[in-house]
Length: 281
Image (cartoon, rainbow, N blue to C red):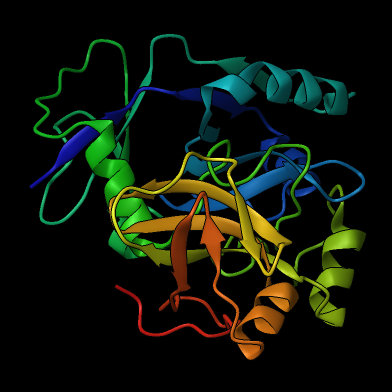
């Protein structure tokens, strides 16, 4: 029953009378009701991901679970957008983020919510500085669980300020609400959705043994298809051009990264086709 802490996550708060309206105008998903959570992102006007995050509704506002290295930039940008809105924006110093998966139960005193991307990922929880937790797993175990499910993570599988939400599979993981009102970058995201122009995606590959280092080029017939992201023994995630992958499979070309052969796998939770993919592990 594994419980682990995310060492590189941070917690922020958005409180105040205008908090709902404020975040609804900025993020890719609708703001949740108290006790519920959503996966969302703040985008550049060009539609690229500044930071992805979990937004948890609480009485009087929201709590944000996000990468620690994106915290300062996110708070700065939210403050610039605030204008006259009645909201308070601040980091919650000393707060920690954890996850319990399988049959594990979050510790007493934690603020918990089911991962809104995929229930199999488990239950995330926020811990105030004075809340103790007994751990029986480390973050490496959590990362292996995530990779096994084929779920991307920012900073490991895609680069912030460079990737579109569709490339990070956010449209498949409930991170974009295509029916909500305007938000920053919406026009680009909506165009990609309605025109079906998301040619680059993060997808899983089977590999024999340990995966190559993140950033290693993936090649077929001398042409670059994409780059290696996070991985564990036997499997990796990669940001890949689907059209080039299709061409390679149709031509019978081997797909390689640092001399190792890669075989595309199917994503059980995704609606888009992965050329040449078999059943997911």
